[in-house]
Length: 417
Image: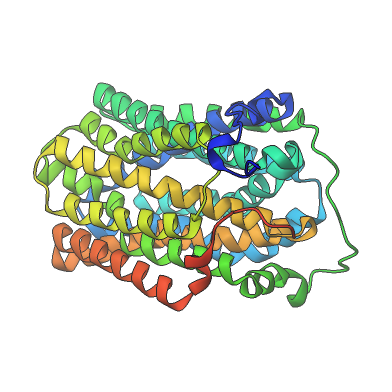
């Protein structure tokens, strides 16, 4: 008798999620908004470094983006679980569009850096609600059998936007030698998702009578993560790996002082990790579901750390770009595994709060990782910052694999809740 679960016999529909009109509306808006935000992120880092020539100033950019998310994520998760998520998505996108428009004004007027930092705090406040909303809304937009496919496509959309966003930003800044047109275009692109969110028709979300916002209600998601050891191990691995391996935060320094490329070359370098990640997302959409997902996760993050070490030592632009692309492909494997685990192993009524906890880990790793990299680079140089971070990432993989044997035993991603 044949084994019906043999991966070679599983029929894979790589476009299962895309066949849903509801998902297509969401995905097209997400593509526009994510491209705009990637453009804004690339332009801010380049503009701040060009104005200051101080690695620590780049670190402050990451801190301004991260702290509001860390501070507001848990209450934001309670709100996301209590009201219609598509409406929260619409409002947060409008807020980010307004903030991007104000950044365009600040850049045009050459306003003091503290104004730019303050506007980044505003975007961070909006993102504290936006990220958990998008993550917890996705399972309401597609049928459960195709949720993993939707996550893979979402990851691919993000990676594609993260390629095109920096390239567009770099091209515009190289052409006009200013950043304000990038921010203005970013503002318009954020509005696309706000408009699309109005037309979404998600399945009704499960609500439980929570009563007023209390410490117990806002920490319910954190309690669930602590109980789910596999989820805790996965997001902890991501937290420390990216926190230590934040090489992309130093790209303005590497581009201008080590690799000697212009603003467009900087855009190419910033896009390179996402080229690899996008190609990996497309490959994963066409392949059967992962088996031995735990080992795949550990190996992928270890490869990411090794590419950070190589990037830190490279002085050739194309070699650096290739290493970043390989690292991005490896990182995308961990992104898909983490997101599927978080959503598939979380009850519907807790998804907003668990997604908020996940967003804290993501922001700590990405944005606080930028702060850590900038701080270390200021005192020890960018090469030491990159190489030591890559070494730290590999050591974290070994530590997490040893401390949480649940990761090593993880096979299928989806399990009944």
